[in-house]
Amino acid sequence: MKYQHVFFSLAVFTGLALLGACNRNSNATMGSVDSATVRVDTMATPERTAVEIKPTDPVPVWGKTIKPEMQVVIDRLVAYNDPAIEKSTPTQARKLHTPTDAVKQVMKEFSVANPASQVDTSGKDIPVAGGNIHLRIYTPKTAKAPFPVIVYYHGGGFVIANLDVYNASAQGLAEQVGAVVVSVAYRLAPEHKFPTAHNDAFAAYQWTVQNAASIQGDPKKIAVVGESAGGNLAAAVSIMARDKKIMVPIHEVLVYPIAQSNMNTDSYTKYADAKPLNKAMMEWFTKNYVSSMAQAKDPRISIVNANLRGLPPTTIINAEIDPLADDGKLLEDKLKAADVKVNRKVYDGVTHEFFGMVPVVPEAKEAQAYAADQLKSAFK
Image (cartoon, rainbow, N blue to C red; front, side, top):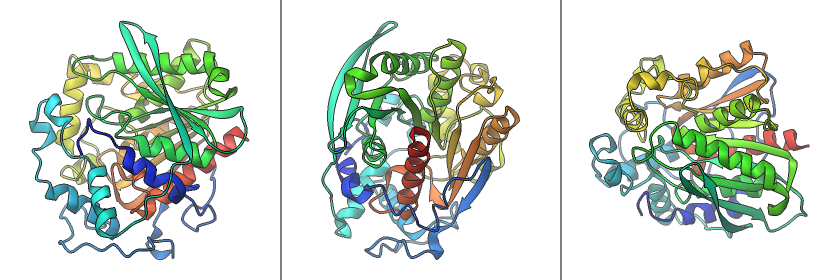
C-alpha cells in the first residue's frame, strides 16, 4: 500500500483494540501531571502485546534503545527497499510504502486481530481561499449527541500523506474519547506553498466552530490534535484563533510536533539517521513547503518564536528516537514561560510515527490512551 492508497486497514485495527487504546490504569499512563515532563518506559510493565513480537535483525545503530515491536515494524519498512524520500520527487514520495504498510505486514505475520470500527464516517467539502478542501468526519456509533469535537491534522511534513494514511489516529481518538473527529485534508506542498496548509487548517477549524451542531457536535467543546506537521498546524490554529478573537480550542494535543527550524538540536544530531524520519527528510520537507529557508523561522512554523500567551492547556507527546524530540521540549519550555498549562510525555524506545501503531506497539496504545484521557478531562 502506498502513501496515496487507503490506510483504512490500520484504522479498522484500532477499533476494539483501541477501545480506549486502553488500559487507562496502566502504570505507564500515569495520569495527568500539571506542567511536567514524564518519560514513559513500558518495558517493565506487563502491558506488552498479547502476541510476542520479536525482531530477528540486529538492533539498528541509530536506535540502540528501540523496543522489540517497534523494531519489527521498522525492519519490515526497511525491507521494502524503497528509494529515500529525500531523494524522491514529492509525487514519487507520496507513492512509497508507509510505516503502516509495515504494521499491516507485522499484523499478518503474527496473526494480530483486526477489530471492527466503532465509528461512522462521512465526507464534507468546504470552501477555502483559492479552492476547496475535504474533511472526513468520524462519529461514534455509541453514546448520545451532542459529542465533543476534535479537529485533527495529519502529518507528512506538509508534503506527503493524506487522511487515509493517518486514519488510524483520527478513528482511535473518536472511539476512545467519544468525540466527533474532523480530519482535515489541507493542501500539500510544493503545489501549495506556505502558508497554504496553515490557512487551510484554520479555515477548517473556523468551519467546525460555526458548524459543530450540524455534525452532532457541541460547539462549546472543541479541541485540536495533530501529529508532526499536523502538530505544528494544531498549535498555529490555536494562536490564530486567539489573535482573530474566535473561540480558542479548549485543549490541544501535539504529537511529536514540528515546533522550530533549527536542525542542529541534540535530538536532530543524535537521530540524524533514524527511521522512519531523519534529518535529511526534514530538510526536504521544509524546502518543499517554504519559498526560502529563512521563511521557516516564521512563527507559524517556528511556534517557539510565537506569542504563546493565552493558549489552551497543552499535551505534548514525543518519541525518544526522533529528530523532533527536542522540538517538543523547547515548545514545552516556551509554553511554561508563557504561563500555559502543559504536560509532556516522552515514550522511550519508539520512533516518529509510533502513535498510530496501536495493534502492534504497546507504547502507541499507552500514548493514545493518555491523549484520550487528557481530552476527556478537558471536555469534562
